[in-house]
Image (cartoon, rainbow, N blue to C red):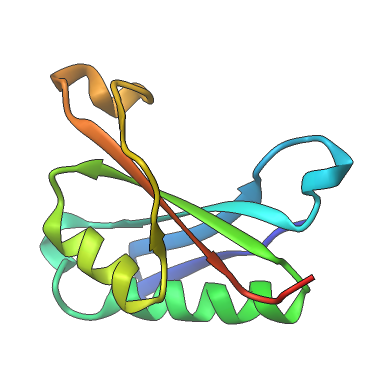
Length: 116
């Protein structure tokens, strides 16, 4: 089972981060996709970065080799957060995912936690 983390303030959930398998095939067993969500009012306070950093440390300790994250663009703060965590830029893709109804562009990034 892959990890999910929750951030709370005053007994209220203000954010979460988690990992899911990238693909079902055995060849991808050390590759995951991660996601982070914050209550919009809590953005810009370091909660997302703390969730991501803790999640990446857990994944690295578990031997995960590749971590994939997706960003609905434009989203400068998310792009900056991913770059600060050593995510590399990959080509963008238009209109994939349910958040792309508005025509936004989706970008992805990946980081290697442990070389194979």
